[in-house]
Length: 128
Length: 128
DNA sequence: GACTTAATTGCAACTTAGTTGCATTTGCAT
DNA sequence: ATGCAAATGCAACTAAGTTGCAATTAAGTC
Ligand SMILES: [Mn+2]
Ligand SMILES: [Mn+2]
Ligand SMILES: [Zn+2]
Ligand SMILES: [Zn+2]
Image (tube, rainbow over all chains, first blue to last red; front, side):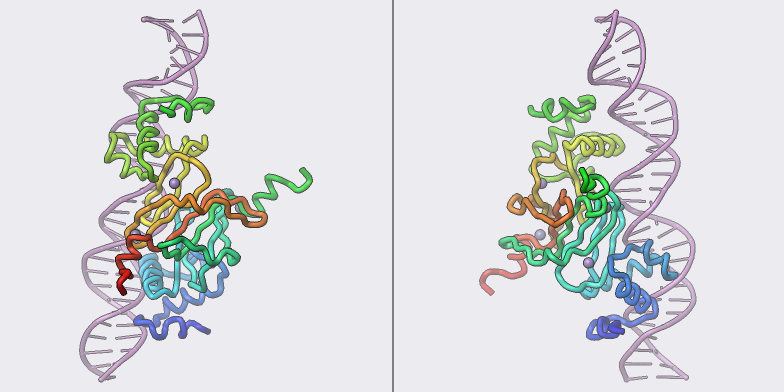
């Protein structure tokens, strides 16, 4: 596990709750909400939110608000965008869009909203 | 006023609440939350949310979630991105980023998060 | 302009993601 | 092992947004 590496050098304790959380984030290859997490492991929501908040302070995790009013959290790997489908609410990591620039601004996160590949095909089948 | 033009051809009534709302959105050159609106005009939140929701169905208005847990609404002009500052929570329209493409996907909205020009300068003054 | 009717409004009650206070537990350094 | 600050779990709370319902209003028809 690379979990010890994520935590070391940071000024936070490696508790069992944090181990479980980070393992889950590493396993899931997509951002997770508290609802997603509590389906997998037993954890109080106060503990969850206090921990992801701390992880964000330490730049271990980053997060964004989806269109279902929930916040999604994931291990911060490298600058990449997230696509949120307005039809099926699915979330995908978009690694092709990486280095957007805007004079004078520092861009830390890019969120794209629209219609995903699947929902697009469902509405505009290729035979039409 | 161009308000009648925004409403005509759509299947909704032009009520005084809607007139006030659209006037406010047109005047403000930035997206507004319900809190912003109720500081300017007296309007029940149910009326506000039901109306902006209808405006969105009719493609008169579009909206996005900021990082202060509030949703912001504005007249839909043309495809342009919005920048949300993670430091000062200000929101700016970014008209330079306009036609992003992603094979197979339909992109309807782009949200950039980061540090705005002002906050950037405050932390990294030009003399350093 | 009066009549009719469906759409809209305003209020209060509700929902729900996320926060906070506090007593108890746990990680970690000495 | 001991001590203590940090972390946990529970319950109470907050606040943006939603919903049911009775009263009001826009807009078409006569
Ligand atoms: Mn990602
Ligand atoms: Mn804008
Ligand atoms: Zn989809
Ligand atoms: Zn700023």
